[in-house]
Image (tube, rainbow, N blue to C red; front, side, top):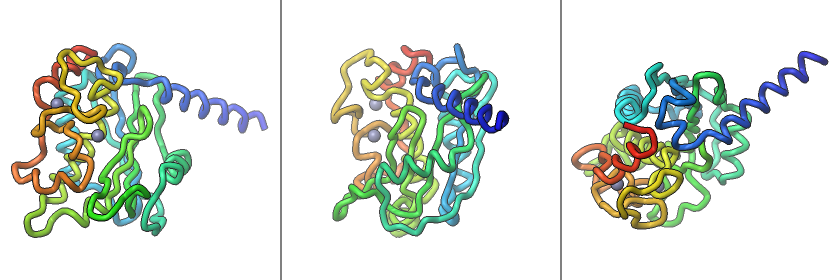
Length: 232
Ligand SMILES: [Zn+2]
Ligand SMILES: [Zn+2]
């Protein structure tokens, strides 16, 4: 009985730290010198190894994490639904998320789904969403459907693009927890530079035709914002 209540206590405390963790905590080394990226994917919908390498390089280039960026990747049962709502996603996070912000580690969570988003309509589909300050979902079925074919980006390019764009929102881009050094907000919380990783079309299937040159990078104004809030 005592052990059970202690376990509950620890869990609640850790969740609380996730809720408090913000862009500055991801960008700077002040509170958290290390980052763990917790990825839970539905069976058969895992990110490619090359995507993880790309994401790791992206994070190491922008975040001050002298004790390192590490990954914890595991499979969860596929749910087999055509689409998932935000409530479904949050429920699965509370069931399957493995790591929480604690000690030297801040944690970012990705859920990889075997279906689409309930808001998907017609030809415009959502590829990813950052729905909480340390939490993101990737609609991997849609990513797979829209990559690897004729005139489409490779799966690695599309996955890296969406994972990095959503992480950009956790870093407070654009004008969303990290102050703008210069005015460059186009659509709400997105960059107005069409070649930038944080342009609004990057998280929907609208981006497909614009990935012929590979994964988009952050342009200078977004980088300046991150540097102004503890990043590099
Ligand atoms: Zn976005
Ligand atoms: Zn930008």
